[in-house]
Structures are given as structure tokens and as C-alpha cells.
Amino acid sequence: MFRSHVLICGGTGCTSSGSKKLIERMTAEIEKQGLAEEVKVVQTGCFGLCALGPIMIVYPEGTFYSQVHEDDIPEIVSEHLLKGRVVSRLVYHETVKSEGVVSLSETNFYKKQHRVALRNCGVINPEVIDEYIGTDGYQALGKAVNEMTPQQVIDVIKESGLRGRGGGGFPTGTKWQFAANSISDKKYVVCNADEGDPGAFMDRSVLEGDPHAVLEAMAIAGYAIGADEGYIYVRAEYPIAVHRLQIAIAQAREYGLLGKNIFGTDFSFDIQLRLGAGAFVCGEETALLTSIEGNRGEPRPRPPFPAVKGLFGKPTIINNVETYANIAQIILKGAAWFASMGTEKSKGTKVFALGGKITNTGLVEIPMGTTLREVIEEIGGGIPNGKKFKAAQTGGPSGGCIPASHIDVPIDYDNLIAIGSMMGSGGLIVMDEDNCMVDIAKFFLEFTVDESCGKCTPCRVGTVRMLEILNKITSGQGTLEDLDKLEQLCLYVKSASLCGLGQTAPNPVLSTLKYFRDEYIAHVVDKKCPAGVCKNLLTYNIDPEKCIGCKMCQSVCPAEAIWVGNEVKPGKKKPYLMIDVSKCLKCGACISKCKFGAIYKK
Image 1: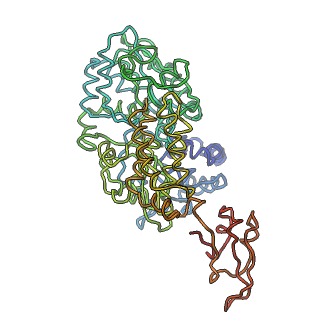
Image 2: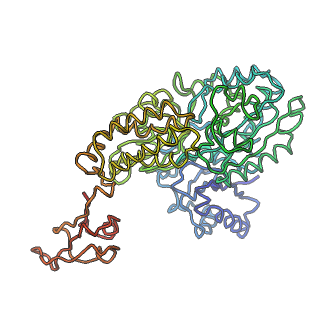
Image 3: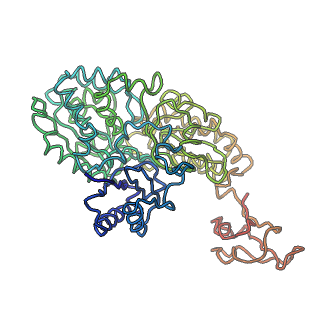
């Protein structure tokens, strides 16, 4: 029995900040101080507050240390763990109240969250199966195979209202029912862990912090539809997730929770890993199945849907990581418990990767129906540097941009679609007044063009033509007729593409045309970028009233475009500098160097 537990985040974000060295140093320092029998160091998954890493929590006090460095470890051990004195300079400021240090759950970031899919992330060591079992792990699987019929399992999932968390929001129980009703000598369960949206890391964090939750859910799904084999298709760029999945699968097999005669019943189920090579299109379910089969990842026409004819031509259910992460809790706590959260048509919670122009970057899980304002202003901590909220982009390249006028919209599947966006897998990128919405649309379209598999003409050619028009607009060559052409082309690509990648590729363009058309018009009529982002539409200037003639900007200009004028302003000691716009590269080096705010772009 240990008197203290030191939980250190071992997710990708904190690992990249050096948390592995912290774990090693903490373990060594504890042994040095003779505390090895009293204090246990636990490597966990993501806590959520990714921008504050490396992160460490000391229990039972619940003291939350952020941005800890290796050199801080001796002080934490000697002061906190040995003498019982909190190292206040390292404590996360929001946990420090007048009454003392409070729990992390009392901070704005966590107050409105409700963790279901993320319940074990940051709580247990994902590489130790006993810790998962200690949090009711594998009890749902035991309950399903020993106390429920396959149809009863499906009925509970149906009644819960769980919808697929991977993008389209299709009812999970209905999908399972289709596969269960399909007659075949072989069926498969597949987990889509090919999370490729820019800025998305929800599934990655679940796999890194709670891999057994996915394994247990897949086994339950296998029991429900009559499958004995499953595949997890995970991106090879997720090395920590892959490593922990390999450990979890081996442990589950050792404990008899995967393999033959699970829990002493006739039910057998095993899981294999398949690594994706980074093709975004393989996140589309039919392309994913094609890739598992050893072929080039390209989508197939639907119908037939995978539940009827999927992997190797056999009935297959495909759900993403977050969807599976809810299953065991639904089986244990019941459909009514899950359905009590969320909205009428969107039950439960949703995990978002919150990024962009936001104070609290990280991973959040909120009940469906939480407003965008609550996410941005309360959980996210607002927009930094006193800037104004302009838009939020949800759904990655498949989603749209939500303007500030819709900041009070409750977040659920139907509401987001109604305003021209979509839930997607859960990326939520916040933008402020310094973002150009035309440039944002171009960014996501560039990604889609690069990731198109090329199988169908509307996506392969149509997205390229759309990007050409956007490039024309941002370079100052666009016309009002181009806006009409762009909108019409978007509708063609949306209606005629083979798979979801092409069908949703126009969404960022259509939503910005709808809500920020004035910015497009400024680009094509006034030849100006209101946000000051599009280089070809900018000129850099020096304010003679603010310039003191120090020449610091001149020293960093790579094009030698800055020169000293002849005029000396009254009250100034030196002539002010000027920019030769014909030479200027618009690189911004001069602005970043000027300490007096004398250089501006317009």
C-alpha cells in the first residue's frame, strides 16, 4: 500500500515535451530519498490540458503540477513527497484558490466536462491490464457473454441512442443489427483508428490512455453479431498507440479475455493490428477495408454496405475508437444512463480536440448540446491576447466554419449540419480576427487535393479546379464571376463524388462563402485581404511617427528592401526608414524585429 501516487502523463503531447525523462528521474529520486515503498510513479494517458505539458498529479492531495522540467523533480520529491509542502511555483494557477489548492475538477477547463470515453485517460497506467480491470474493466464483456443474448446486447446499444463518433453519426445499434441479420459463415469487427484530420487527436489519446476499452468493446461487438475476429486499423504515425495496443492485446490473450472460450463460454474472439501508411482516404470505411485486404486504399461504391458485404466480402461492422470507448459503460450502466446525457437526437458525450486560437489547447469531452460559447469561453479559456472570436472549424477537411453569430448553437449532429458544418471525428479549430477565411478554405482544400485517391473524376479533378480558383482569388487575380464558378463547382463535386472525402471536400469553401462572403468580395473587388494574411494583397509600410531609425528591421531584411530616408521628423534624432515595395518579399521578418510597432501591413 502506497501513501502517495505520482501520475505523469505519457501521452504523445507530454512525451514530446520530455515526460519520459521525468518518469525516470522521479523514480530514481524517490529511491534516492528512500521513498520507494511509500510512493508509486504511474505513467498514464492524456490528462487533456495538452498545452501545459509535461503534466504531473500527486495523489491523494490531487496537486496538479504543469510544465514540469527534469530539474524540478528533486524539489518536488524533497519538498512535497518527503516534507508534505506543495511546490507552489509549479502548481497550475487555476487550482490555487484562497482556501488552498483545489482539485483539477474545479477548474473551468474540467467543470463542464463529463468523461465517458476518456474516463480512464490520465487515471490508469494503460500498459497494465490489472489497472483497467480495477476500474470495472472487462466486466461488461463478462456480463454480455454470460448474462445476455447477442440480441439483448444490440437492443441495449440501440436504446442508448449511441451514434457513430467517426463523422456521419449513423446509429451504432442499427449498424450492428444489420450485420447480425446478415447470414454468413464468417463475420468481422473492425476499429477505424485511422484518424487523419488536421488537428485531431481524440482517437489517438484513447488508444494511448485506455486501449483495453477498445478491445473489450470489439469483443462485445463480436459477440453481438456473431464474429470471431477483429482488426484495428491504426495509423503507423501513432507509435505510442501502436505499442500500447500490442501490449494490451498480448495481456488480454494471457488473461483469456481474447482468444478461445472467453469466460469459459463457447464465444471465441481475437484481434489483429493493421498499420495504415498515412492515406487520409483510408479513414473512409470501404477504402479502409480495401487496405486491410492488402490492396491500394480506394473506396468502393455503396451499396452493398459493409454490414452486408465488407472485409473479404463478409459482413463487417466498422466503428471508430471513440464509439467503441462508450460501449462497455453502456452495457454496465444501462441504456437509460447513457441516453440521459445529450440531446433528443444526439445522446451521450463527444470528445473534441480543441486547438487554434484558444487559451486552453487540449482534449475535452462534453455532453452533446453544450454550446460553442461554453466550449470556447469557459472550457477553452477564451481567445488569447484580447482578440475577438471569428469562427470555429469543426469536422476537419470534411467540415465547415461556424461564424461568431452561431456561437450559442448547441453542439450536436443535426445542429452542426443545419448551419453548414458537421461533427466529423471531433477536431475543433478556433479562429480569431487575424484569420483570413478565404485562406482557411484554401488550406483545407489543399489537404483534400493532396489526399484524394484519384479514383473518381469529380474529386480528382474538381477539387483541383476549386483550388485553382481560390489561388487566383488570394493572389489578387480573382473576379466576381470566379465566386459563382467556385460555388457551382462545389455543388457538382459534392453531389457526384464516389465517397465521403470528395462529397464533403467543398464544405469549408461553401461555409465560408455563406458566412464570410464579404471577405471573398474584398479579395476580388478591393484586392485587399481584410485579415492581412494573403501575401500578394499586402503592402508593408513604416509609420514615420513611430520609427526611431534604429535600423533593426533593416538588419534582418533578406531582400535589402528597407532603406534610410532623408527626412528627420521633429523630436526625432535619426531619419525614419522606408520600405521599397518592389523589393519587399512580405516575409514579416521586419515586423517581428521592430520593438516599437512602427511597421504595419495593409
